[in-house]
Amino acid sequence: MNTRGLLVRMHAKHGQEAAVEELLRSALPLVADEPQTTAWFAVRFGRGEYGIFDVFPDDAARDAHLSGPVAIALNERSSELFEGAPRIEKLDVLGDKLPVASSVPDTRGLLLTFKVKPGHESDMEDFIRFANDAVNEEHTTTAWFGIRLRDGEYGIFDVFPGNEERFLHLVGHVPRELAKQAFSLLRAMPEIEMLNVQAEKIGQDTHQITRH
Image (cartoon, rainbow, N blue to C red; front, side):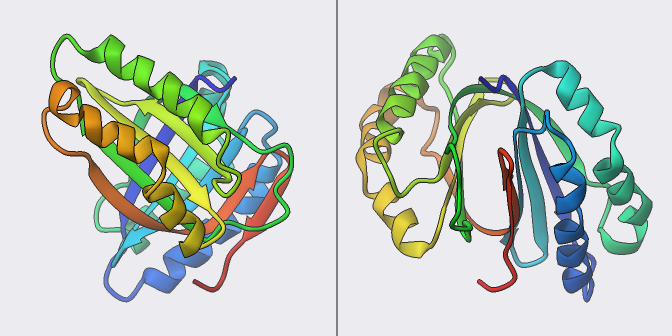
């Protein structure tokens, strides 16, 4: 079971988008040598915004990654490539789905974040456990993570081989149930970000995606 994670966001300087994508893809072999980095995804959020989502079994594994070669590479080129330093957010993993093997690379992803009404944190964590069971039955959702961020904020990160699989998830059981409970549990409707996956490590499998 993974219990800890990181969400890193960075904005590329104008004209440096290709260099940022190459830097992220070049990090894949480094992450492949980190057995305690269970899953790692380099993603593009939108125009000029990139990120990394990764998960670990415990604090020690996360700390080792934060002082490892990927973090060093990002820091060394931060002033050259990014508008400001990368924003690193630590998170807790409350539930996950990981494949035994992943022979098909994932090209698409989703990040949902939502703030819970005060006093309903345990209800949201119950919902994430329910969603974890449900998504295990979705054979077209490659990997899925229910996460707790800061100050009553929760989220879901998941990846898919392509647009069709992502659409099937978005019209599936978990989003429908979340919408039903939004009024009672959430301060506002979830924020949904559609992602392109640049590179990924899931278990021992690594994929570099160069076309979207």
